[in-house]
Length: 248
Image (tube, rainbow, N blue to C red; front, side):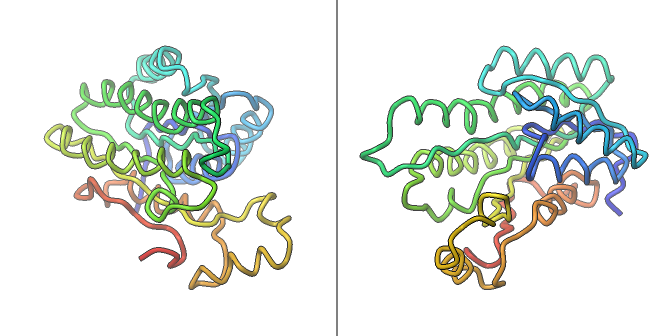
């Protein structure tokens, strides 16, 4: 089940967090994984080395999704060199927190460029490659914040909510070409930053999660692997909530 042997997958923002866990999980199922990064070459190389050490296939590729030209050229080159692109996971994202009256245009534009325009550029380039094969999987990593909202994250929430509209639209545009387009909306993921929260803040956040704990990045990667697999061939336009019950 979820066998991805022979598939080529590209994961953006894959040097850490959900992207890294997703790259590792896809490789474990047999996919050849392209690990994208924008700045952290050392961490991306570490991800690739770990995958290869465990018997998988991977390579690192630097490009900044905020540049549409750079993104489209890089993805086209991957598809040409490797002969195919079966799976695209648009995971790269940034959050610059602040209340609306504190939000600067620069912070808004940065988040739009990476989280929304970058994801669209990735999908555009990836789908071009998939159209030739008449099959493919596109998976957007959105956020529970895009569905529920969150004080201090107006720009981030806007970009993540917009991805859900993108998901549903592209699913309808390319279903007849056997290209599925889905999204996952993770909730609170355990990271170095969340582990350092003050006890009272951590307790308050945990109180909003019926399962009573944050997710690991691996627990988000699993649903992404499902959406990338043949077992999800009849799933498109879906928003898969991975939030421990925060939003149902």
